[in-house]
Length: 271
Image (cartoon, rainbow, N blue to C red; front, side):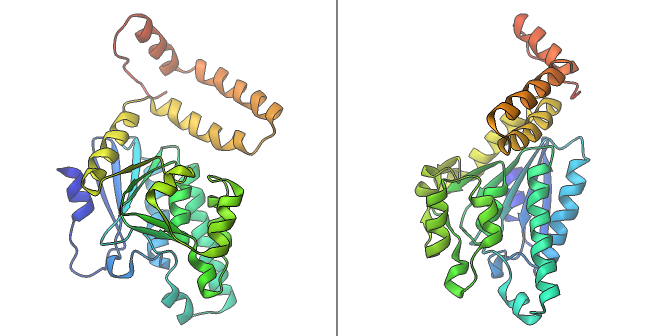
């Protein structure tokens, strides 16, 4: 099926750091450095940034899925690349580049689902935490392992601490220990854990369910979700009330309510 093509596509040598396959309103992105456990090289981060920018403007794409080729999802930054040129300005630029990619995912006006089939560590764990939703295989493992090499995972901490309880995040950051998929679901890092053979079908079904909603309402709602989360309670309610008022004035809200009352399927105009 199309999903399997997206995830299992072969390339001669790992010359293309990011693969994309679109099917039924879903863009399937595959990190494609399998022999390096899909470590986030400068080239891969650049490809992700460019692709996310393109997806933001593509009306045909309603949901984005990020997965990885080979045995792992993503092992974080490419440590060999970092040590090859350890100048401070180069390292600073790398972390700024990575942070910008993670921010793009949060600000993308379309839901992003992490498809995690294997290990996700350091910036790979950050990538999972940055995605709006995550579905993991029972074989997946997660960790912020930088501390094991003397490097506290400070930038992964930003995303991690926003999706799991503080003490849980700090334990992961301070020990560098891996947690399994069941524990990741328990702490809220992933939404669902499934058998490896069910991963693609589960992700595809979830993506299809979301893709069937109003793209306008989802873009409005996703942006509002992250904005209100940084506000105090009173400010959040004031802001959310304004968003709902704006949403109610949209074509799709009127169409959706009329369709519900008439007991028919809505026809979205995405406006």
